[in-house]
Length: 222
Image (cartoon, rainbow, N blue to C red; front, side):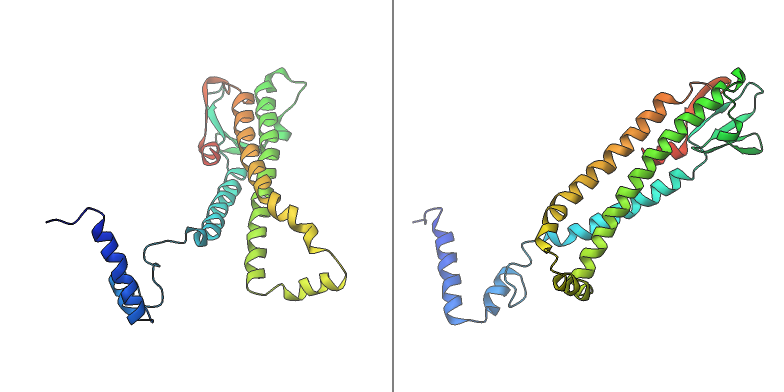
């Protein structure tokens, strides 16, 4: 005579109810569920939301460091010039052989032989502007996380009190708090993608001899 399939679960529920009546502290039920007394269920459910802000802060810090490294990097494009010298071009400067110079000084629009240099300068200038704006978005998002952490620890209580004294409606900041971060993330991703697409499309295919290749600094952003 076997019990129906659903009977064990009913027996288990009845047993836990009996334990609740006999053990109000919950120590026996906690032991049955494998969790500490007074925290029934904590071992079964993970509060992933508590990890959201630290993860976002870590991701943004990494993105900002990569953006800074790429902005100052000297290998967005590399190849060989007509004199068979290696060329490594950044966004603002380039190294030809063992000599380094600024692209805006090397570019002479009136000289047809500087057409490649001017093309590299133009591509780097637009990419640098877009990437700088993306970096600003990253810093704004990091600043927002820092303010939230300070507010949760009561470090902004004096500032909030002053705003209330000046009759500044804090509710007016609600749209900024709710829509600002997603807009900043969207701007960050859009600006970085535009910087990559624009540089790849505008940079010359050759630096004088052979094919030019996108370099390490470009791959950092990608």
